[in-house]
Length: 332
Image (cartoon, rainbow, N blue to C red):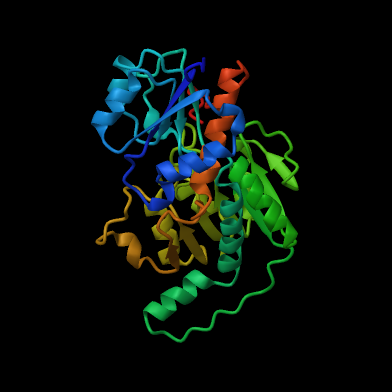
């Protein structure tokens, strides 16, 4: 007699976003075949509307999604053991009173690593070659040659040396940059030439030719970069935000770009998203905008996500610690 599946995994595909993040049944089935140890041990369900979510949560052990049906999870998920967020940021989960103490929350930390690292490398080269300024000149039909020196030997400051920040640091060092990292612990990181704690931020900003934001959004990092921090940056420095919009004061950044204090900036994250067509940011000089698309692999983002989910399913079945557990108190 064949035993019934022992673990019910529900995939919530209601997220209204790019198809890059859609968990289709085809992708889910293909991923499951890559994990034969789970054959016959899991029940898989998928929802595209809230009604299907409610029915699935009655028996689900694992919930995989981005937009959380918080009240349903709190009141109607008696078996739920794990919530997996198909993103790195978890600020939208807070406040977390709706999550029962016994539920483990995991996220996609590391899934963005390679694509994001390549984009940080791209951003560094763009900033070094004054591409934001050249794009502004083109928009204004202004022939304005902006010459640059080699990037080798310059200093990059990476604020947030996690999966994305460390991967970006590795790529930058290959180009001969000195990479200085800031991380919560302040302990040395092998991807950086030097590593410091958050208290060193103001001392490090004047040294950096390029400043990259790759830190989670938490109570401690909200508006981490504002008017005072931009004032400390080296004249002509380049700036890029790759994490969350609320980590930076964009009004202060706009003032800095209008004054010419820094040479250029690249933003991949905004609040709200999509960025409204009438936003003042579209016309800021020397600002290059990318619509939150440079950290997600167009073909591999969901396959890598599903591999992580099924790896954690095996760990759950075997009573082993899961990967990518989120510390809800630290907010990442």
